[in-house]
Each structure stands twice: as C-alpha cells, then as structure tokens.
Length: 507
Image (cartoon, rainbow, N blue to C red; front, side, top):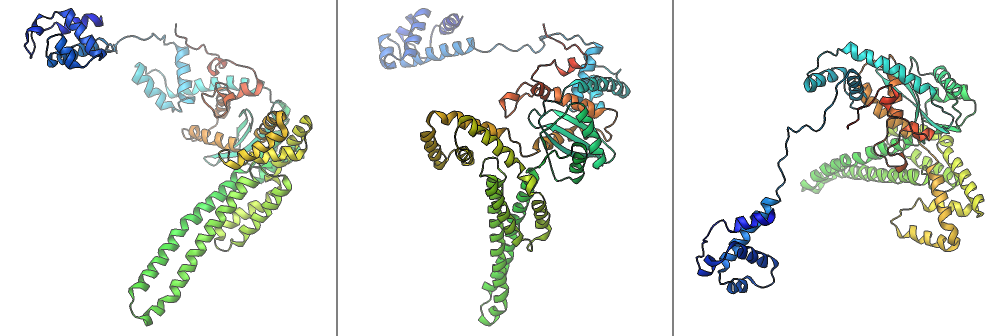
C-alpha cells in the first residue's frame, strides 16, 4: 500500500519546475528508485542528480512527494465515535449496584445519584426514599458479614474518636492490616461507653497484645475498665505535630522582630545630630536584642525538635535508657523558653511531662524483638542494637556506608540475614495511631454528605472500607488486597457480591 502511494505520488505529474530532458524521460519506477537512493544517502545529491541527468531541484521534488505519500499511508484511521463498544443490560439489580457504587466509591449524594441517572440514562423513577430503602437492605447484609469475620488475628489495635456534628464516633483498627473492627456512633464519649464497646469486641475474639492511642483520658480509662492492665502505648504523632507547629510559629515570628528593628534603625540613621540619636540608641539596642533572641529561640527549638523526632521517638535509635536521658534533657531545655511564649509551650510541655512512659513504650517492644534476633543468630545484643542505630542514618551519607561496611566485615555471611531481621523487627513495631487519623480523614468525606449518620450507615461504611481492595499502596503486600484479606489471609469476592449482587461481566 505504501509502495502504491509512492508510485502514484511520484508519477502524478509529467513535468516539474526544472524541465530538463532527463527528467522528462524518467518513468514512475525510475523516479521511485531515485527517491530510494536519495533516502539512503549513499552519495551526495549533486552526484546522484548528475548520474541520472536531472537537476537537484528535481531530486528534492521527488523526495517531498514520496515523503508526503508515506506520511499519508501511516496516518491513523479516524476514530468512529459512534461505534458501540459494548452493550449493557440495565436491570434493577444493576441499577442498585450503580447506586451503591456511586455513593460509596464516588462519594455521591442521593440527589447526585438521581441527577446522574436522569442525565445519562433518562431514568427518573428512583426517589430518595427508594435509595434510602436500598441502603437499609445493604446495611443488614453488611452487618451479617461484619459479625462473622474473626478478630483473633489482630495483635495491635489503634483507638481514637472522631466527632461528626458534635456526635462522637469511636474508631478502632488493626495497625497491620488496617482492618477496622470498631466504628460506632455514641451519645457520650466517656469511660463507660468505651468500656462497653471494648468488652463486646472481646466477646467476638479480640485479644490484643497492646493498643496505641492519644492522651484521651476517657479512652484509656475505658480500656483499663474493660481489659485491665493491657498496655496502651502513646501516639507519637500528636507530640511531633505540636513540636512542628511550635517551630513554625517561632520561625514566622522572626520577620516581625526584624521589621521592628529595621524601622528603629532607619529612623536612627536618618537623624544627623548625635544628641538626637541618643534618644533612639536604647530602643535600637532593645530591638536588636529581641530580634536576636527570637532568632536564637527559633533555631534552638528547631534543633530540639529534630532530636526528639529523629533520636528519641524514631524507631531506629539508641536503647531505652539513652532515649529517656535525651528526652529529659530536651524537656528541660524547652522549659527554659516557656516564659517567652507560654500559650504555645505549656500545652506541649504538659503533654511531654505526663506521657513520657507511654510515648517510649514502643522502645521496650522493639528491644524485646531485637533480643530475639540476637538469640536466634547467636550474636551479642549490642551488635543487633548497633545495626538498629545505623538505620537511623541517612542511606545517602558516607557515614552510613562506612558503618555498614565495618559490620559486614565483622559478621561476614551473617550480616545480611541479621540485617533483614532487624529491619523486619523495626517495621513490625508501630509507634503511632496515624492509621486511625488517616481513616478519620477518609470518613469525613462521607460525613460531609450527611448531617446524621444513624440507621446503620457506619456499619455499611465499615464493611465497604474493610472489603474494598487497595488499588495502590506504599507497602507492596497490600496492593490489590482488602483489609479483610490481609487480616484473614483468605480471598473474598467483590464487596458487591458479598452484598448479594451479581456483577456485570463483559463478553
């Protein structure tokens, strides 16, 4: 086909701008061969034209015509937008699946569902009451599925509460699989309420090693009432957040002091007489001191925050005794500055004083795991602890590779399995309830559509979030798996099929 286009294009006219006898005597096939030779560039075009007794202009004309023919031959075919890709049988069952998917997957409101059906399907027979009744059926089926799933495999739980229109919602989830085992709207968020719901979870087989929660007193009191001495570790997310907010506030305050000093200094420099300058000497000196104090305070708090975040509250770090010593030092240093900005420092200092044991509780769990690694490979615990501290260094730094190479030389063939065991132990030591915070942020997108969340709506949301497969994740083992599959290790049908529907399949 391309060859025919080139032949037709080249022989489209009998004469060209350069009317030479050689050009007039060349037939279509010779012109095609001339184009191919010119395309190969085996010799200069001047010599090629002379050999065929034609002008260079004639050669360029044949090349342009042939190139245009080739481009035309490879033009993509025009898309037929009216072509039917596949046919869809719109049944009542399919419409119900669409409504559920639009509401749960696309965060659509009931009115939005009605508008889409009217716009895309010319369907106006679905009322808001019908959608509500459909969801009530889905809620009953979702409750049945939720009640049958075992909770005994969950080892560490993260607890928190979220508020929707001033109504508290209790949240609990597995930090490993992200399976949500508690999502309940309550009238009051107090010790009794938490204790009752935790006891109900125990009856369903939930038996945790420990929990992670923020500093909520009602939550911790309810856990003590229901589960006795079960440890409740602190959440490092909140103190780190407060520290970063303090650093940001102090850094943004510095330009105000700088501007105040510049104004006084500008006035001072504009005055020529020394007697008049003396009146501004003391204000200028005071402005300089305040600016320098603000700069020093912002820099010092930034350094203390980095120490707390990277050396004390990080998973990779020194043993518990060293962390506690550094924790106390940072707390003492922060107390020195509390008079400069008491409304910012006092809440942070109160949290750090009261929660030191629970914030560092994860270190004890990590050291137990590191001791097990040392026992399994028959090496000193100090060696394993050192490998853990190396992971706190920047992998791009020379120091990281110097220490890694040093221990590779000492441990030889044992280094890689020990290193992998240490990394795995660190990965399996949670220290924050950030997964609950993430769940809360996702729930707010649903709560925004409804001022009231009763009638089993939370049960349906919990079912959907637990059985919806992750399309992507930072952890490869979670991709294309749902929290329920990660928890139980068993696959399950699509969440629509779990609700009793038959999904549409293209032939």
